[in-house]
Length: 88
Image (cartoon, rainbow, N blue to C red):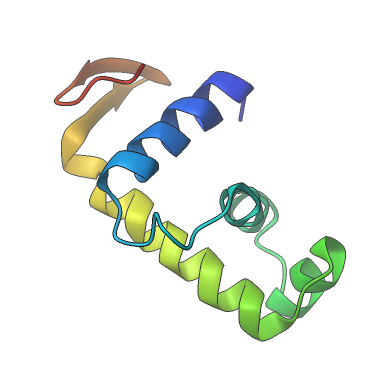
């Protein structure tokens, strides 16, 4: 995932999510790592230096937040075609 996608995603999460007061940038990075590698929680948690419980808690919260954004963004062939919300 390139930095622009991460920046846009972070902006949308920051604007529309329920966990924005507690979520930190590393939680998004953990989630992207999990989605890319789809390794065990124990392995991923160890690689980012946190407990399995904390890793699981934040990864699944952020995954749910990303899923909730789906109706707001339409993507085709990796390009955003339209967005109900501003991406910048």
